[in-house]
Image (cartoon, rainbow, N blue to C red):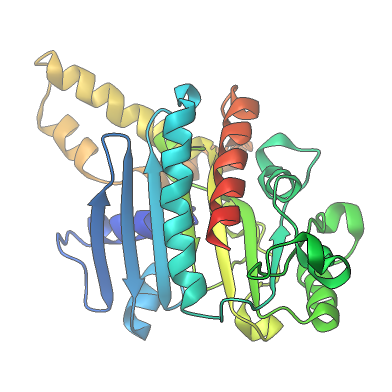
Length: 311
Protein backbone atom coordinates (compact mmCIF):
# COMPACT_ATOMS: atom_id res chain seq x y z
CA UNK A 1 0.00 0.00 0.00
CA UNK A 2 1.16 3.56 -0.73
CA UNK A 3 2.35 5.85 2.04
CA UNK A 4 -0.51 8.27 1.41
CA UNK A 5 0.22 10.47 4.46
CA UNK A 6 -3.30 11.92 4.21
CA UNK A 7 -6.65 11.16 5.78
CA UNK A 8 -8.64 12.51 2.83
CA UNK A 9 -10.19 9.89 0.56
CA UNK A 10 -10.26 12.10 -2.53
CA UNK A 11 -6.55 12.89 -2.11
CA UNK A 12 -5.78 9.19 -1.81
CA UNK A 13 -7.73 8.56 -5.00
CA UNK A 14 -5.75 11.27 -6.83
CA UNK A 15 -2.41 9.95 -5.51
CA UNK A 16 -3.30 6.38 -6.54
CA UNK A 17 -4.40 7.46 -10.03
CA UNK A 18 -1.27 9.56 -10.55
CA UNK A 19 1.05 6.81 -9.36
CA UNK A 20 -0.56 4.31 -11.75
CA UNK A 21 -0.92 6.74 -14.67
CA UNK A 22 -4.67 6.30 -14.90
CA UNK A 23 -7.17 9.05 -15.65
CA UNK A 24 -10.44 7.41 -14.64
CA UNK A 25 -11.34 5.90 -11.28
CA UNK A 26 -10.80 2.15 -10.95
CA UNK A 27 -13.78 -0.15 -10.54
CA UNK A 28 -15.17 0.16 -7.03
CA UNK A 29 -14.63 3.92 -6.76
CA UNK A 30 -17.51 6.21 -7.69
CA UNK A 31 -16.93 9.96 -7.70
CA UNK A 32 -19.09 12.99 -8.32
CA UNK A 33 -18.54 16.72 -7.80
CA UNK A 34 -20.91 19.58 -7.12
CA UNK A 35 -19.93 23.25 -7.29
CA UNK A 36 -22.08 25.00 -4.67
CA UNK A 37 -20.79 28.48 -5.51
CA UNK A 38 -17.49 30.08 -6.52
CA UNK A 39 -15.92 29.34 -3.11
CA UNK A 40 -17.46 26.00 -2.09
CA UNK A 41 -17.15 22.64 -3.87
CA UNK A 42 -18.41 19.23 -2.72
CA UNK A 43 -16.68 16.01 -3.84
CA UNK A 44 -18.28 12.65 -3.03
CA UNK A 45 -16.18 9.48 -3.19
CA UNK A 46 -17.84 6.12 -2.64
CA UNK A 47 -15.75 2.97 -2.16
CA UNK A 48 -17.85 -0.05 -3.06
CA UNK A 49 -15.61 -3.13 -3.19
CA UNK A 50 -12.56 -4.70 -1.55
CA UNK A 51 -10.16 -3.97 -4.44
CA UNK A 52 -10.86 -0.24 -4.17
CA UNK A 53 -10.69 -0.50 -0.40
CA UNK A 54 -7.21 -2.00 -0.64
CA UNK A 55 -6.08 0.46 -3.31
CA UNK A 56 -6.93 3.55 -1.24
CA UNK A 57 -6.38 2.10 2.22
CA UNK A 58 -9.85 3.24 3.25
CA UNK A 59 -12.81 1.05 4.26
CA UNK A 60 -15.88 0.74 2.04
CA UNK A 61 -18.30 3.60 2.50
CA UNK A 62 -19.05 7.23 1.66
CA UNK A 63 -16.53 10.09 1.87
CA UNK A 64 -17.76 13.62 1.28
CA UNK A 65 -15.24 16.45 0.98
CA UNK A 66 -16.28 20.11 1.21
CA UNK A 67 -13.58 22.50 -0.05
CA UNK A 68 -13.88 26.13 1.03
CA UNK A 69 -11.56 28.67 -0.59
CA UNK A 70 -9.76 31.38 1.40
CA UNK A 71 -10.91 30.38 4.87
CA UNK A 72 -8.65 33.02 6.45
CA UNK A 73 -10.73 35.87 4.96
CA UNK A 74 -14.16 34.24 4.91
CA UNK A 75 -17.21 36.44 5.55
CA UNK A 76 -20.08 35.67 7.93
CA UNK A 77 -22.38 35.04 4.96
CA UNK A 78 -19.89 32.61 3.42
CA UNK A 79 -19.50 30.81 6.76
CA UNK A 80 -23.27 30.36 6.96
CA UNK A 81 -23.32 28.91 3.44
CA UNK A 82 -20.49 26.53 4.30
CA UNK A 83 -22.22 25.32 7.48
CA UNK A 84 -25.52 24.90 5.59
CA UNK A 85 -23.70 22.76 3.02
CA UNK A 86 -22.14 20.70 5.80
CA UNK A 87 -25.51 20.32 7.56
CA UNK A 88 -27.10 18.99 4.37
CA UNK A 89 -24.42 16.32 3.94
CA UNK A 90 -24.46 15.28 7.62
CA UNK A 91 -28.25 15.07 7.64
CA UNK A 92 -28.25 12.66 4.67
CA UNK A 93 -25.85 10.31 6.44
CA UNK A 94 -27.69 10.54 9.78
CA UNK A 95 -31.08 9.83 8.21
CA UNK A 96 -29.65 6.75 6.49
CA UNK A 97 -28.64 5.33 9.87
CA UNK A 98 -31.20 6.24 12.57
CA UNK A 99 -34.73 7.49 13.26
CA UNK A 100 -35.67 11.13 13.80
CA UNK A 101 -35.68 11.06 17.63
CA UNK A 102 -32.86 8.60 18.27
CA UNK A 103 -30.04 9.66 20.62
CA UNK A 104 -26.77 10.97 19.21
CA UNK A 105 -23.44 11.21 21.03
CA UNK A 106 -20.91 13.72 19.66
CA UNK A 107 -17.24 13.19 20.53
CA UNK A 108 -14.62 15.91 20.07
CA UNK A 109 -11.25 14.20 19.65
CA UNK A 110 -7.93 15.92 20.21
CA UNK A 111 -5.85 17.86 22.69
CA UNK A 112 -7.44 21.17 23.68
CA UNK A 113 -4.00 22.52 24.71
CA UNK A 114 -2.51 22.12 21.20
CA UNK A 115 -4.20 24.49 18.74
CA UNK A 116 -3.91 22.37 15.54
CA UNK A 117 -5.37 19.42 17.49
CA UNK A 118 -8.06 21.36 19.36
CA UNK A 119 -10.80 21.32 16.72
CA UNK A 120 -12.86 18.53 18.32
CA UNK A 121 -12.96 19.97 21.87
CA UNK A 122 -13.70 23.46 20.49
CA UNK A 123 -16.64 22.21 18.43
CA UNK A 124 -18.09 20.39 21.46
CA UNK A 125 -18.13 23.68 23.41
CA UNK A 126 -20.41 25.20 20.77
CA UNK A 127 -22.95 22.40 20.33
CA UNK A 128 -26.58 22.59 21.39
CA UNK A 129 -26.78 19.82 24.00
CA UNK A 130 -30.33 18.59 24.62
CA UNK A 131 -30.24 15.15 26.28
CA UNK A 132 -30.32 16.43 29.86
CA UNK A 133 -33.08 18.94 29.09
CA UNK A 134 -35.27 16.28 27.47
CA UNK A 135 -34.67 13.98 30.44
CA UNK A 136 -35.19 16.48 33.27
CA UNK A 137 -36.97 19.56 31.87
CA UNK A 138 -38.98 18.35 28.86
CA UNK A 139 -41.47 21.22 29.19
CA UNK A 140 -38.77 23.69 28.15
CA UNK A 141 -37.82 22.10 24.84
CA UNK A 142 -39.53 21.34 21.55
CA UNK A 143 -41.19 17.93 21.65
CA UNK A 144 -39.53 17.04 18.34
CA UNK A 145 -36.02 17.72 19.67
CA UNK A 146 -33.48 14.94 19.34
CA UNK A 147 -31.42 13.94 22.43
CA UNK A 148 -27.83 15.09 21.82
CA UNK A 149 -24.97 14.64 24.28
CA UNK A 150 -21.25 15.35 23.86
CA UNK A 151 -17.84 14.66 25.37
CA UNK A 152 -14.23 15.69 24.73
CA UNK A 153 -12.26 12.71 26.12
CA UNK A 154 -8.74 14.12 25.69
CA UNK A 155 -5.80 12.14 24.33
CA UNK A 156 -3.84 9.09 25.44
CA UNK A 157 -0.82 11.20 26.40
CA UNK A 158 -2.77 13.14 29.04
CA UNK A 159 -5.33 10.54 30.19
CA UNK A 160 -3.37 7.28 29.93
CA UNK A 161 -6.50 5.72 28.43
CA UNK A 162 -7.14 4.85 24.80
CA UNK A 163 -9.83 7.21 23.50
CA UNK A 164 -11.95 4.37 22.16
CA UNK A 165 -12.04 2.84 25.67
CA UNK A 166 -13.47 6.05 27.12
CA UNK A 167 -16.03 6.31 24.33
CA UNK A 168 -16.99 2.64 24.72
CA UNK A 169 -17.71 3.21 28.42
CA UNK A 170 -19.98 6.17 27.65
CA UNK A 171 -21.73 4.35 24.79
CA UNK A 172 -22.39 1.29 26.98
CA UNK A 173 -23.94 3.48 29.68
CA UNK A 174 -26.06 6.03 27.79
CA UNK A 175 -26.73 3.82 24.74
CA UNK A 176 -26.87 6.34 21.86
CA UNK A 177 -27.96 5.11 18.45
CA UNK A 178 -25.27 7.02 16.54
CA UNK A 179 -21.85 8.50 17.19
CA UNK A 180 -20.50 11.64 15.50
CA UNK A 181 -16.73 12.01 15.90
CA UNK A 182 -14.83 15.23 15.15
CA UNK A 183 -11.06 15.21 14.67
CA UNK A 184 -8.16 17.11 13.12
CA UNK A 185 -6.72 15.39 10.03
CA UNK A 186 -3.56 15.46 7.93
CA UNK A 187 -3.46 16.41 4.25
CA UNK A 188 -1.08 16.07 1.31
CA UNK A 189 -1.80 19.61 0.11
CA UNK A 190 -0.91 22.91 1.77
CA UNK A 191 -3.90 24.44 -0.02
CA UNK A 192 -6.36 22.30 1.96
CA UNK A 193 -5.15 23.10 5.47
CA UNK A 194 -8.15 24.27 7.52
CA UNK A 195 -10.14 24.81 4.32
CA UNK A 196 -11.49 21.30 3.73
CA UNK A 197 -14.06 19.26 5.65
CA UNK A 198 -14.35 15.50 5.19
CA UNK A 199 -17.44 13.61 6.35
CA UNK A 200 -17.58 9.81 6.23
CA UNK A 201 -19.80 7.01 7.49
CA UNK A 202 -16.91 4.60 8.14
CA UNK A 203 -15.58 5.84 11.47
CA UNK A 204 -12.03 7.03 12.10
CA UNK A 205 -8.54 5.90 13.13
CA UNK A 206 -7.16 8.84 15.17
CA UNK A 207 -3.59 9.86 14.31
CA UNK A 208 -3.39 7.75 11.14
CA UNK A 209 -2.52 10.70 8.89
CA UNK A 210 0.57 11.65 10.93
CA UNK A 211 1.84 8.12 11.54
CA UNK A 212 0.52 7.86 15.11
CA UNK A 213 -2.44 5.57 14.54
CA UNK A 214 -4.59 4.76 17.57
CA UNK A 215 -7.34 2.17 17.98
CA UNK A 216 -10.18 2.63 15.50
CA UNK A 217 -13.45 4.29 16.44
CA UNK A 218 -15.87 2.38 14.22
CA UNK A 219 -19.11 0.45 14.28
CA UNK A 220 -17.07 -2.72 14.74
CA UNK A 221 -15.47 -1.43 17.93
CA UNK A 222 -18.52 0.34 19.39
CA UNK A 223 -21.56 -1.49 18.06
CA UNK A 224 -23.27 1.62 16.66
CA UNK A 225 -22.84 3.59 13.40
CA UNK A 226 -20.08 6.20 13.42
CA UNK A 227 -20.01 9.36 11.31
CA UNK A 228 -16.61 11.08 11.24
CA UNK A 229 -16.09 14.77 10.55
CA UNK A 230 -12.51 15.87 10.04
CA UNK A 231 -10.54 18.91 8.94
CA UNK A 232 -6.87 18.82 7.93
CA UNK A 233 -4.85 21.16 10.14
CA UNK A 234 -1.30 19.89 9.49
CA UNK A 235 0.98 18.72 6.68
CA UNK A 236 4.46 17.25 6.89
CA UNK A 237 7.56 18.94 5.54
CA UNK A 238 7.86 16.56 2.59
CA UNK A 239 4.38 17.65 1.45
CA UNK A 240 5.29 21.33 1.71
CA UNK A 241 8.54 20.75 -0.17
CA UNK A 242 6.78 18.80 -2.93
CA UNK A 243 4.09 21.48 -3.31
CA UNK A 244 6.70 24.26 -3.32
CA UNK A 245 8.77 22.39 -5.92
CA UNK A 246 5.73 22.16 -8.19
CA UNK A 247 5.01 25.89 -7.73
CA UNK A 248 8.66 26.68 -8.48
CA UNK A 249 8.63 24.58 -11.66
CA UNK A 250 5.39 26.27 -12.75
CA UNK A 251 7.04 29.67 -12.31
CA UNK A 252 10.01 28.61 -14.43
CA UNK A 253 7.66 27.30 -17.08
CA UNK A 254 5.77 30.59 -17.17
CA UNK A 255 9.11 32.32 -17.75
CA UNK A 256 9.82 29.97 -20.67
CA UNK A 257 12.65 28.28 -18.79
CA UNK A 258 11.11 24.86 -18.98
CA UNK A 259 12.81 21.77 -20.32
CA UNK A 260 12.06 18.07 -20.58
CA UNK A 261 13.53 17.38 -17.15
CA UNK A 262 11.34 19.99 -15.42
CA UNK A 263 8.26 18.65 -17.18
CA UNK A 264 9.08 15.13 -16.03
CA UNK A 265 9.79 16.31 -12.49
CA UNK A 266 6.48 18.14 -12.27
CA UNK A 267 4.41 15.31 -13.75
CA UNK A 268 5.33 12.78 -11.06
CA UNK A 269 4.72 12.62 -7.31
CA UNK A 270 8.07 13.46 -5.67
CA UNK A 271 6.81 13.02 -2.10
CA UNK A 272 8.53 9.69 -1.35
CA UNK A 273 11.95 10.83 -2.62
CA UNK A 274 11.73 14.07 -0.61
CA UNK A 275 10.54 12.21 2.48
CA UNK A 276 13.42 9.71 2.25
CA UNK A 277 15.89 12.61 2.06
CA UNK A 278 14.41 14.36 5.11
CA UNK A 279 13.84 11.44 7.49
CA UNK A 280 17.51 10.50 8.24
CA UNK A 281 18.09 14.02 9.61
CA UNK A 282 14.77 14.15 11.49
CA UNK A 283 13.70 17.03 9.25
CA UNK A 284 10.29 15.67 8.21
CA UNK A 285 8.40 17.89 10.63
CA UNK A 286 4.63 18.20 10.86
CA UNK A 287 3.73 21.82 10.13
CA UNK A 288 0.69 24.04 10.67
CA UNK A 289 -0.02 27.61 9.41
CA UNK A 290 0.88 30.64 11.54
CA UNK A 291 -2.76 31.79 11.45
CA UNK A 292 -4.02 28.43 12.77
CA UNK A 293 -5.82 30.07 15.72
CA UNK A 294 -8.12 32.03 13.43
CA UNK A 295 -8.61 29.12 11.04
CA UNK A 296 -9.59 26.77 13.87
CA UNK A 297 -12.00 29.39 15.19
CA UNK A 298 -13.67 29.72 11.78
CA UNK A 299 -13.87 25.98 11.23
CA UNK A 300 -15.13 25.37 14.77
CA UNK A 301 -18.06 27.70 14.09
CA UNK A 302 -18.85 26.11 10.72
CA UNK A 303 -18.75 22.54 12.06
CA UNK A 304 -20.71 23.28 15.25
CA UNK A 305 -23.40 25.14 13.35
CA UNK A 306 -23.55 22.40 10.71
CA UNK A 307 -24.03 19.68 13.32
CA UNK A 308 -26.61 21.72 15.24
CA UNK A 309 -28.73 22.22 12.13
CA UNK A 310 -28.30 18.64 10.93
CA UNK A 311 -29.30 16.85 14.17
